[in-house]
Length: 237
Ligand code: DC
Image 1 (cartoon, protein in one colour):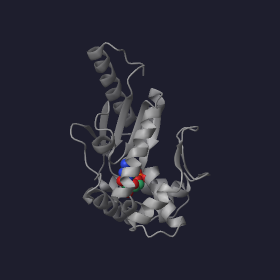
Image 2 (cartoon, helix red, strand yellow):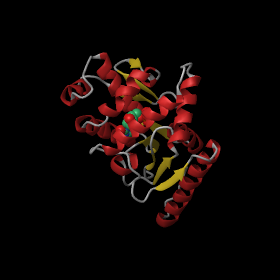
Image 3 (cartoon, protein in one colour):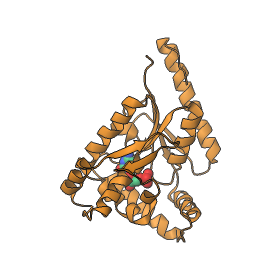
Image 4 (cartoon, helix red, strand yellow):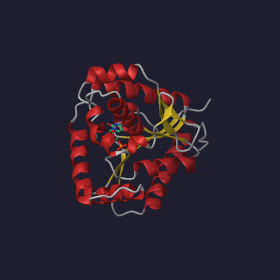
């Protein structure tokens, strides 16, 4: 049996992590895990059950009573809360507005970290993206990447994404929200947003998206061939 290969991509909102992770996974023939979508599904769970997003204990109880599954039968995978596919609903503003607070709770994060590690036991060629994948969840991943970009660039990208969904957008407000969400993600004690020690950093502000994916693919292929030379076990990606 070959060794698991895990690629982690972390960074703040609007750096193009999800799209880059999805394309990288396609190029390598790996599966892709969007861990932000998992936290968003918990935020939706709070909304639908009228749970105060600051009520950690109630949130944890609700998580224990519902099945939250990543459905790998489509590419990219979708997310299921109970029997419903919620991958579109979790992008709505009400979910975005509380997800950072929901994700700050210890009891929420331990459950998510466990669920993410469980996914990796079943998908041993995995590109996983989020905030803590390389620092907390998979510190021994084969390749760990940190993507960043200037806040204005990130706000512009996010605003474009929302416009594509037909929403009317004030870009300055998007920027303010991004800055606030990053500050909250960075300052929490549990799994804070930070560049994992020893990870590869790429600033995507002035790089075309295709070039970012090329750079990621190069990094992974280089690491895989170095690993196969070290252990003589052959990389098959
Ligand atoms: O990437 P995103 O915007 O969909 O993430 C939603 C929120 O979830 C964001 O506030 C950060 C949080 N998150 C996290 O705390 N840890 C992760 N591994 C992924 C996302």
